Image 1: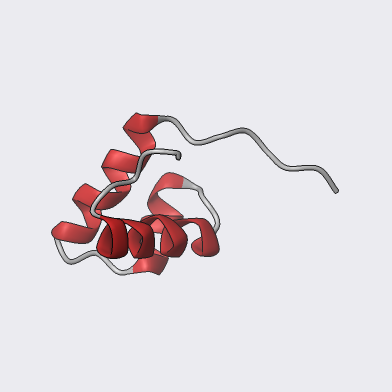
Image 2 (image 1 turned 135 degrees about the vertical axis):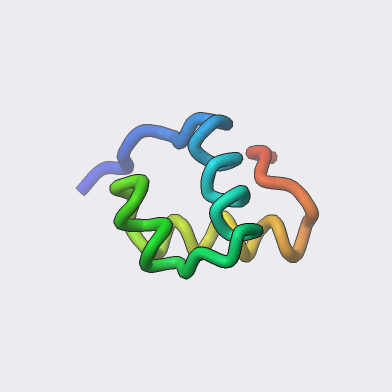
Length: 55
């Protein structure tokens, strides 16, 4: 199975905004129609590195 498309900066920012407004990972996932693992990964990356940008 191949990888899907890369998330736009807008969707990443929206995820972080929802997280900062105390939405759960499940709520964000359902709201944006993105897998929970992706949402969790983006939030974790921001917490650890302070950024969501691709290296």
